Amino acid sequence: MTMLTKGPQASQMDHSEPYAHWMLREIYEQPETLAATLGRYVDGDGFRKDACAPIREWLKATRGEIVIAASGSSRHAGLAAELMIEDLSGIAVDVEYASEYCYRSETAKKNASVMIISQSGETADTLASLRKANLAGHPTLAITNAEDSTMAREASVSFPTDAGVERAIPATKSFTAQLLNLRLLSLLAAESRQTVDENDLSVLLRELLEIPSRVEKQMKNMERSVRTIAEDYRIVKNFLFLGRGIHYPIAREGALKLKETAYLHAEGYPSGELKHGPNALVSDDTALVMIATVDRRDVGSVQRYEKVLNLMHDTREQGANIVAVANAGDDTVRALAKHVIEVEETTEALLTICEVIPLQFLSYIMAVNNGIDVDHPRNLTKAVLTE
Image (cartoon, rainbow, N blue to C red; front, side, top):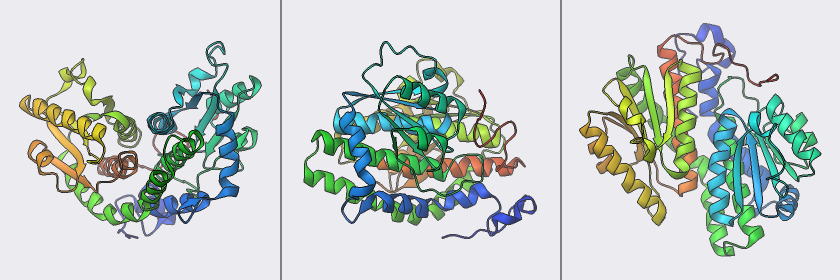
């Protein structure tokens, strides 16, 4: 694991040595935490029966729809899960803001199973959503990073991540652990519904097992690239993050990270929505962070990628200032973007884990460059305990 020298605020955070801040340490811990979470649920090329049995039972009780209630970064993980689960298993998924779901009528959701996602397992509005779902008799499942939390205890089934204590307020390793659990859930759902044959399921699981080593191998280059970009963008105050399909939630997460750590204005949009209004903001003063990765084995992924290339071309003609997250060696993207952050190609769903990490680096480095205590952003707490 890479060890970095202390930064300008290291004196405030000596207990995080040899890293300057807990946030940077926790970004670099992700290969370990992903491996730990995988080890909890996967044994060799198959699922651990004891750990996965309750999840399989919850999926059996699911009659055709899953409602996900979550807030902040956890909701972005839920948005990615919506596509993972629907595409592999055909189970319909609806993602709600927890702060809204806990006040919704039950009329349209009577037959749903309910999943809540929370790093702490104590967030007030998400806990209220869980209790509402339990009271209504829904089968409930809690994904938390604290298996002794209130949500883990009160849900029908607890499906904890294994990211360890996250000391920095911005979610980094807990977010990628959530994405990993949700990918496992989508594979278990496909198994349950028999929508993917056994051989293909084994291939998908093996690719998932490779993720910790893939991530670790790329992190130094990611940080190096982002440091150059952050220096070039020191005076930029507005960022638009764009992604298509499953990459849209990652664009949302990248924007949220930049807001909460660097106090910069940032918004996340589906790439195809840029021309429906936000395009008016595109100028040399507003950076476009465009996720342009692709899984070339996936026809849908290639189609989305080609649309992103068209958008990059059009916005460049307008004078856009483009930062692209793209596949390593993609010269087409490099010709269209001012800066490129490279990630190794992998399965479309797993690209989300790889591509969010450079966005975490971007928010961290931009914040440090602005003299901000990234571990304790103003007005924020690790768990929102009151609405």
